[in-house]
Image (cartoon, rainbow, N blue to C red):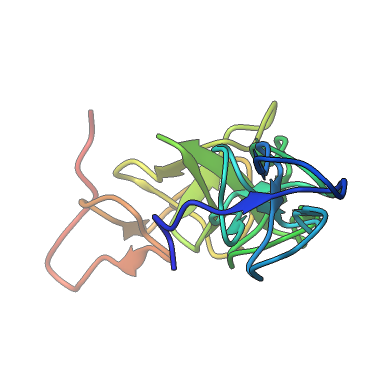
Length: 166
């Protein structure tokens, strides 16, 4: 019933009703008090009949809130209505893109920047990375090559071919 304006009156003998303030709601008529929004939910308007769940990448661990806070670097929430953000598991990191934090894995053939682990980069030509979550790529060994990018391993040079020299 979003859009329905709800009023309450906590005292008897009054000629009017009060609106529930932001961070609170009531979904029952003749209610004498407003209820606080539960952790993981918020209300940013007066006279609401329900609270809104925090979106993915945001949380609030207190009741009666008017907004949800974004997860900090290194934490994430993938669902809605979270009371707190969780630490990223090993080999993963939280990447802030626009408003939503997304959980991203640094895959084989990629490396992450070592300082903040905020981006994945493809391994450049002549390099490879076979271990997920790595912070660097390795050079292809002698007798092997890879012309593209994002290699998990280098390929053997075929008979009749030699390595290109730069």
